[in-house]
Length: 328
Image (cartoon, rainbow, N blue to C red; front, side, top):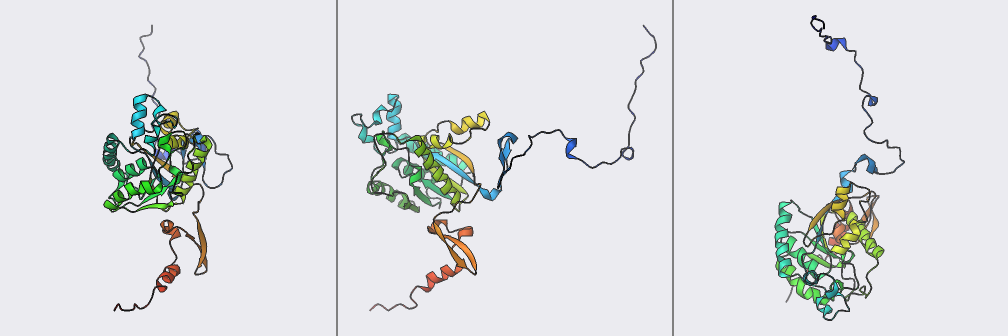
C-alpha cells in the first residue's frame, strides 16, 4: 500500500470571456412534447401534449347544477330502486314533475352559500322547465340581478318514470311565477322553453340515449352562441351523465373520473366550453353603413358584436308618436 498522498485534480476555473458565445437553439433541449405534425385549422387540441391552448374569447365558463333532492329522489332512496316512480307502479303518478323535499330546499340554501364562496357569479341562469329545477335555480341564484331563461333542451331524460314527465305550463307557472316575481327576478319562460302546454315527449319507453346526447350537444351550441361568458345551467342527473360521458374519453383518468361520475343533488360542476367555430342564433344580416351586421331575432342575444345597430334603434324610436292627444 503506497504512503504517497492521493492527488486531487480540480477543474480549471473558466471566466465568461473564456466561453465562446452561441445563440440558444431548440436542439439544445430534449424533446419533451410529441411533435405536432397534424394538419389542422383554427385551434389545435392535441391530447398527447397534456394541455390545450385556445383564445380566451373562444371560451366560456359553464356551471352545471343538478337540482336539489326531490320527493322522487327520497322515495327511490328509501326503496333502493326506481320502482316507486315507474309508471306501472300503483301510486307512481303522485310523483309527476316532483317538487323539492324540505331537505332539498335546505340543500339549495347551503348551495347558495357555497356558490358565493366559490366565487361563482354567472351572468345568466339557464334552467330546465321542471318544477324541481325551477325551485333550485330560484333559491340558489335569485335576488342577484341575474336573468333566468327556461330552455327545454336541458330537461331531464324523458320516459318511463313519472317524475320525468312535466306538468302543464299553466300548473307550473301558477306556482313558480309568483316566487320569481316576489324576488324581483326576470325569467323568460317561453322563448326557449315550454314549447307546448303539455309534455308531448314523455312516453312509457325511456328516451333513446343518442337523443338525450343530441339535446345536450344542442344546448352546448346554444350556450356557445350566447353573449354571456359565465353561465349557470340548472338541470338533471341523467341528462348530465349523458352529456358529460360524451366528452373526456382521452383525458387523464383522474379528470375523466371526476367528469363522468354521477352528480349529487344540488352539486355544482364547472367546465370550460371551448368554441372552435362560431355558432349563430336565429337572426338576419342587415346593412349598417355599408357593412353587413348580424342581428339576432331574440333580443337577449343582442350584445357585443350582435348589438342592435344604431339605425335600427333610431327607427324604433322614430316610430313612436311625436305628440300625445290630451285626455279630456
